[in-house]
Length: 87
Ligand SMILES: [Zn+2]
Image (tube, rainbow, N blue to C red):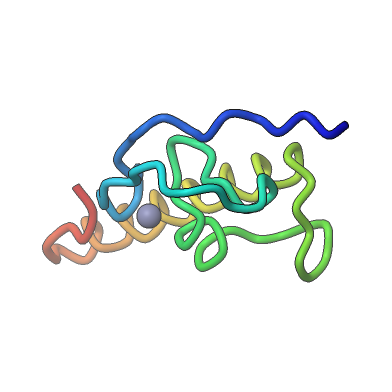
């Protein structure tokens, strides 16, 4: 018998600020992990496990790289005297 993890709680993404509400059952490997939504994790993060990797530890590493990329973009915009994109 497979034990499925609980769906993640409702949270707002740390990059795009979109609310992430728990939806119906999905495959547990695709659940968003707070504080970054799955879309931002894929778009901004650099994966180290190859295409389609859903290992949770490597997903968290990917989230950290996504947050670092967002902070780098934010710092670059502030350095260029442009409006901040996030937050
Ligand atoms: Zn997001």
